[in-house]
Image (cartoon, rainbow, N blue to C red):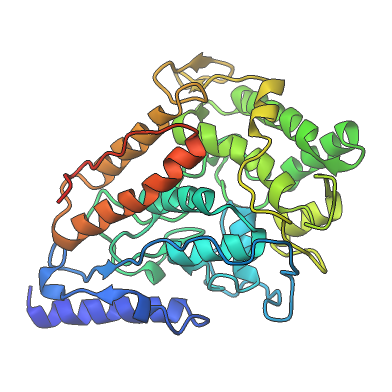
Length: 379
């Protein structure tokens, strides 16, 4: 392949990145474009990602549905996916409105708009990026696969975005159906009606931790009873419980003294991808507080339906769970090894850097010192 073609491919990747971030003119200044002749496999350029952002200077509550971030409906071609929080950030311009952003921009956005604690923000963002992002271009889609993330790294890496089933997204979602039924990323009115019903029954019309625990248990049982391919272990086991407390921690107006979410605000986030009017972020930096409480209400071990049959759940003793969280870190590393079995050159360096930047969030979020591992060596 000629050097001219490699150069043109690299320039196209850069152009894609610049078009993806109309609100961030400094993007390319923060990302060093490497020499295309030394790229990972000679077919694309590799961007050298910046380190993840640290905590913001101001961490109190403030208005986030402001004039600088008006809501706009998604345009044709814009990416939206299974995470209502990221969908809302894109629709308000906290990340690029097309739904494609770098991990650094996503971390900045969740801190700015939701007051998400820094290490937790690093953990969840780099988790999604390592499993579903484009390591070569340092871009990640909050929805499906798109050319806006640039040329793909070598397969089996896929850069498929948040919609990829079985990595960051998974079964037993709160307002998204299991992938077995055909659409794991669009708002599901039937599931939202269940959330409203349980909020009325257990929360006096509000979604709180009690409702979260009941809903988590019911959607698990519903998936076991209807999805012959139901799987609930490792990454999904952790993200599902985190997903259950997310609305209590981040969708409740920061001026409220009680952590309970009204149904109008819930519908605004989950369905309309929109901050409620006059919405203020959390008064303090927050992560996954309440997770242990909802788990304790209806303890559930990781596993899935076996032999392609419904109501045939079997526990998977090899899966990570809350008693062995560092097994989750090892599972993530093993998944990364499968996605990038033979990374070369700058792609390899970027991958190691992402894993290195990811690790500070691991110990902070998982609650113990998981030994940092470099699957491709330290050099």
